[in-house]
Image 1 (cartoon, helix red, strand yellow):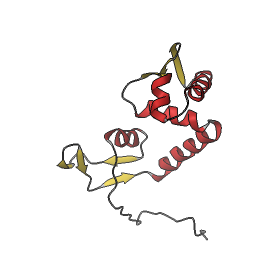
Image 2 (cartoon, rainbow, N blue to C red):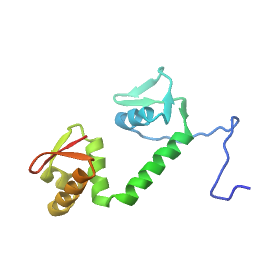
Image 3 (spheres, rainbow, N blue to C red):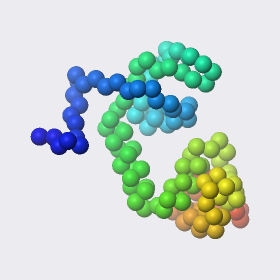
Image 4 (cartoon, rainbow, N blue to C red):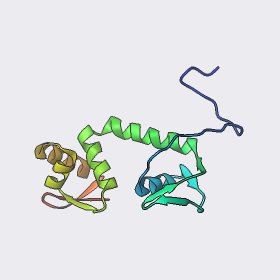
Length: 135
């Protein structure tokens, strides 16, 4: 029997979500990971806003992505995670230590140490002193 924190989903299960706001980047990421599949016939209700009438969500792939995020959180410091999230969300691929410190509101010294660890872990490339690029 499933516990109160578990639920079962089968072919007859239907879910409905209230309004959710996702950026284009977030939608593309969810599609890239195979979590979200939407039809191409999407209505637009305002500039840069679209209404999605129907979407398929692969819960197995979502669970896998959540596991990977939990694993990252367990092996990386919060500052490292914030830096990686900033690189993922930013349009520019190269950033300075000062830009990152300001963006995530952390001391420059903490950001510098974390950047060094991320380079050692092959998560970022060091372009030159104080300049880093996502891989």
